[in-house]
Length: 409
Image (cartoon, rainbow, N blue to C red):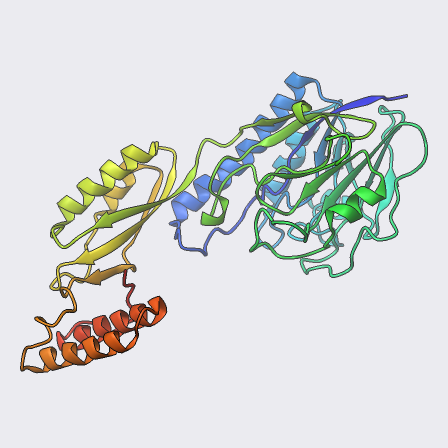
């Protein structure tokens, strides 16, 4: 009878993601590189699992993006998992890699397409309701999970009325869903198969391997302090909502959970995503000077050649400079992918004061009116900001510049 279970947990790889949207704007060659990174992360993780001699590999969903995954990627995915043998692998398909008749998770469809069966060490839970499975080499360990059958949110509170078995041994849940109480690690993630920490703890599982959120978080037993559930997060960063460290989880489950010092985070990603604000003023009048300031900021932030950096320029420019023409080759020499956002820059039209408002021309009279409105606004910071913005937009028009919403400070 098993009293402990050593595991590796990996989810949300999103193999073959399109990566075409978002503010990072990856070109095709870098989208391809990132998808290769995701595939290699699985290879590294499985190799680490073999070296650690874990008892099981847990994959709670979103291994690939079903809309864009190709046959070659699916075959490679199962070939990599086959190399983990004799370590068993348990998979619960998520909302991005649902189980249905034309899914590569469907053994009949996969064999028809490839001529091969799924690896014998891989178990895919194909019930949309939480069900229990066992694998022969892990006596006394009971696995529970369910699958998504389409890439649409599930609104049912999936853990209500679910209970772990009463048999001696270990009871382990794999769940792809949204913890909707507390602070969500990724508040923009699609809310699907919602549950609360209390609902999960009430089920009585020793441990739940969670997928869907792209950052690490855990649920702990208030009495023992043990970890009863954890999101491993996405192992390879792709977007601005995935900044920080990314890893896979290694741990040892005992009756009543995983001891906090027994859950280890292992890195399989070579890149970090950073959002870096860079302040400039009207003295920056050339692209060379701007590049110099950005380079200094990258060094200070510790950005490496492998990193993805989103630079946000903040401040004011000379009124005659609307934007800077950045050399793409220069960007590529700084790091793996560098994006420079100039949308927060505003022209420096000087201070709004009585002296600047005294001019008899249209600009002076406009400034005078803005000064009157500013005085009438009192101490309301919101009104002050709106008036400053209105002034900037008005002066843009008077100076023949593009009229658009501006950031003011």
